[in-house]
Amino acid sequence: MSIYTQIDANKRKSWLIMVLFVAFVAGVSYVFGQAMGYGGSYVGLALVISGFAAIASYYFSDSIVLGISGARQVTEKEDNLLFDVITNIAISAGIPRPKVYIINDPSPNAFATGRDPKHAAVCVTTGLRQLLDKSELEGVIAHELSHIGNFDTRLMAIVSVLVGLVAMLADWFTRSLWFGSRDREEGNSKSGTIFFVLGLVLAIVSPLIATLIQLAISRKREFLADASAAYLTRYPEGLARALEKLAASKRPAGFANNATAHLFIVNPFKGKDVTSWFAGLFNTHPPIEERVKVLRTM
Image (cartoon, rainbow, N blue to C red):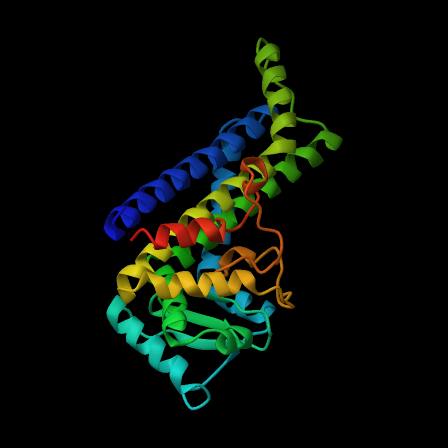
């Protein structure tokens, strides 16, 4: 499979999942609205709330992520090689050089954040800087700048908002059961009961389904960023070797948390990558062995 074919295939799959996710959110809102007797107005309320949440996420998600990760901004004088690599890759990608941050942690990892290429940041750990050689570092940086250039950072912020919205809707519906729902119109008792039962089921499973969709999108974007990085550096082996080194490192990440784990180039929770089909649904990243295998076919 060529680099271009890999990129195109992952773009199509990612956007298909995204469309299905939005449809899922709308469907859950509709069922909850019907079950509580509010009809379609509940969908409108859900969309308004998600809109405000999306705006807040659009403007402040990068600051929040960097803050909770304990990252600090660095200057070119502090790490000239890192700045040179980022500058060169950014020129190749046709995007402005992002701000550069570092996390003082021995666990090797990296991530990118920001709403668009003009408002973006790349963050690496001290462990990553010490572990990788220049060609491997170029592969990792190209991967992260690909996330920025492909607008993955914006996409995943929006997806996170949708996941939070589904959880909030399920919580609202569950709480409404304690206060009683509005009286249903006469003649609709049967359909009302069906929607009520569906609402109960969705209140339990919809947050889980939303999270699984989020993780599926995250895994697809990792494959796309790998392919884009190979295209930028013209050297897939550099990223492949970097991923192998990151996988071999067993240092725990002190900055890791569930809210940001999907942003990093490899899962910061060491030892939790699994390859079975069912358990793999809960992974934030595809298996590194699979990513390396794909890179080495390019």
